[in-house]
Image 1 (cartoon, helix red, strand yellow):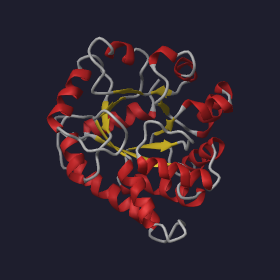
Image 2 (cartoon, one colour; image 1 turned 120 degrees about the vertical axis):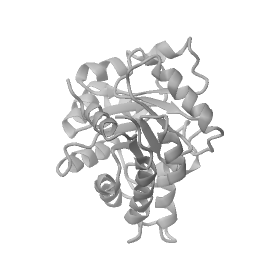
Image 3 (cartoon, helix red, strand yellow; image 1 turned 135 degrees about the vertical axis):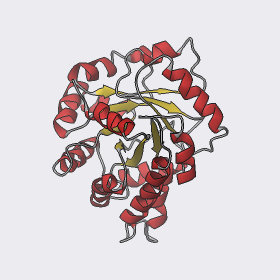
Image 4 (cartoon, helix red, strand yellow; image 1 turned 90 degrees about the vertical axis):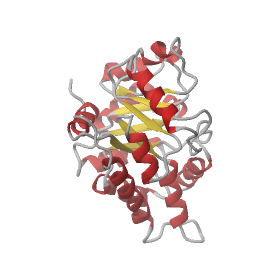
Length: 277
């Protein structure tokens, strides 16, 4: 079965470039504004969208994404409303892949079987669940794959060659390489080390490898794009949301464009690096 993710990565490879993967938090700073941001991302240059599912205990996320989740939850965002965002997005865009990224608890409470059915119907393409290791694949990964959703796994600098095959065992769509140990939004210490890690992962799999955590600028994106199949940006985008809000923490006329302007810059950075098709 050809998926949206496979199609999009193939299109980007045919153009001789990496894909730009943008992360935003569903419902941040409110449902209507978040929906407007979601609709605007592809036009700004996003190839793939990661939609963060707000959760009360986001253990892998740095302060910017934690605050984005808190804003969304205060505004009443739920997993059901997040799926509604995807359904609304699909009325206008049938091609851009959307991956839900978050934690298992909201899905567990929703009910795995019902969630997978609803997610597919909404137009979700894949899942990234940062707190479900391969040892727990029976919980969600295997049912998701059986239902037809990609299940994207995280690899980190501490994932050695002995651990890597286990991590890759049921991974599909792409591999998300976390460029550093720790939480989102840090600083990349060595682009060379990231490139070497991507090459090591690619020796074990034919899946595309996307790199995230620490990419903030067009220059960062270009540096990562040299070796990776995808460049993931999240904290820098949700920080743009925060900085655009008014004194009461509400959206302003500048909120959507604050995000899309940075996406356009990042897209130019990614597209500045040409690779053999």
